[in-house]
Amino acid sequence: MKFFSFADKREIYRIHVLHSLRGFASSIISVYVPIFLLTLGYSLSKVIIFFIVFHITGLLFTIFVCPILIRKLGPVRLIKIYYPLEISYLILLNFLSAFPSLFFVIAIMGGLAMFSYWIPVKILLIKKAEKEKMGSDLANFFVLPKVFGIIGPLISAGLIPLIGFWPVFLIAISILVFSYLPLIGISGREIIQNFDIRLSRVWSKLRERKSLFILELFDDIVGQSEWFWGIFVFLIIGTLEAPGIVGSLNTLGSIIFTIIVGKYANKNSKVLVPIASVCIAIVWIARVFIEKALSAYLITIVASFVMTFFLVSYFSTIYRTVKNQQEEEFLILREIPMVLGRLIVFGAILITANSPRLFFALPIFATLVFLVVFMSTRDKLAA
Image (cartoon, rainbow, N blue to C red; front, side, top):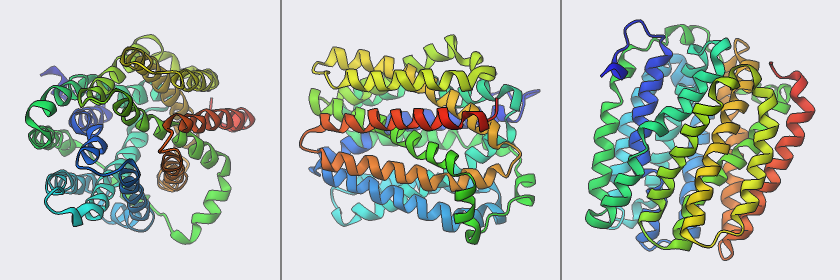
């Protein structure tokens, strides 16, 4: 109960609790959405097309609709819109087997839901985080959902083979509704007053911060490639339990990172990013040779540690750089290279669908390019 006490806590604590509970709900079903589609008989290529529509919808929403909604409603109210959208998305998934024509409708609904959450919550995060505590604030934001979600994938791995997908989706929806409560005490009026993003300035703003947006492109290729790992493990092991076990083991590496490196990232993020990048490349090279379940699970723990190491260090550097410099504008415009990165990942999965291991070349290449760009621009980034 102490976790849910907000007295004498910084406002960012509410964001951490909100994000943790939402992450717990998401951990139960997110890794199983592509698996669910595969079990309905859709091919891997059709599943990837589903997520292409999902993310293109989200990008269009982010560019054309999200700025208007944030300006008129504020980020807190926009997050409130996320809840009915996400619940509708999960409910419609249950009806897909009976109504296949809903396939693209569900993808669109999912894209609207995800981006109506992530854009405003990132704006709140950077606004409420303290510059001197950016590393630990971001570590808590990334890792706490995984700590609270450690049993989520195990719940789904244990229950889905026994009772099916829909009852497990209902459990996730119930937790999702509960995650709404911390949102009630978060203010965001000051963000509305200073929020001004105009489409006419998008191209000039992208050019103005082109180095940051190039980093965002390759960062998201690396990050989104991890999404495919759960599907790949399901394909090589062939059991419904495998993705849930992978999701749970992902948490262990994140917890280990927080214990060992989390606070160090507050003041040394620029030093840690290159080290983490090299480690990511090594992990993906090792994954090429994975054949058995045990080795897949072990490399998952290592990869989770390394990815959390990378994300916390990198975002600490980037968020310090843009804080108090029209950061809302940056957080919305960065979705353009981020979604482009995801589309590159999805395209690579489609091309290598018959030989999935060939896909691993993409994150290795992207990590090395990211490292080169980061090293050439890090003098311009905040310390």
